[in-house]
Amino acid sequence: MFRDFINKIKALGARVRENTLIVIVIVLVALLAFGLGRLSVFYGEKGQFKVIYPNGQSASALTGFLGVGGIREEITLPPLPQVAGYFVASKIGSTYFFPWCPLAVKISSTDRIYFSSRVSAEGAGYHAGRCNGM
Image (cartoon, rainbow, N blue to C red):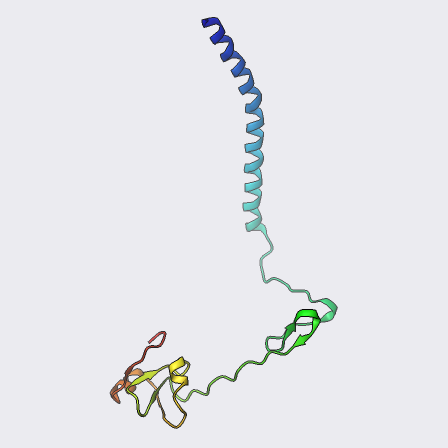
């Protein structure tokens, strides 16, 4: 019985030696691949990427894109609001906003008051409105 146990251990040892070589090779290949990947970051080409357009076309920020079926569609951007001051309030209201705030856009142009600073708006009796960044 003891002899059978020893023989089983010897057989297991022989199998482990065969598999150990395979495991070591796999681990070394994995480490080599990882190391080469890390090195490619340091020695890679640095700079901006380059976009190549077909048929000599070029990109434009304000014109369109090729839509479905190759039909060119124009994109128009809304005009930027003309800002007279850094803060805007309504003559009939009690709050001031940034000019690009959605609540400030709703104020009619005849009722708008512009302020150059928070201090001047608060000095006129207005308090900060609910707008991002206020």
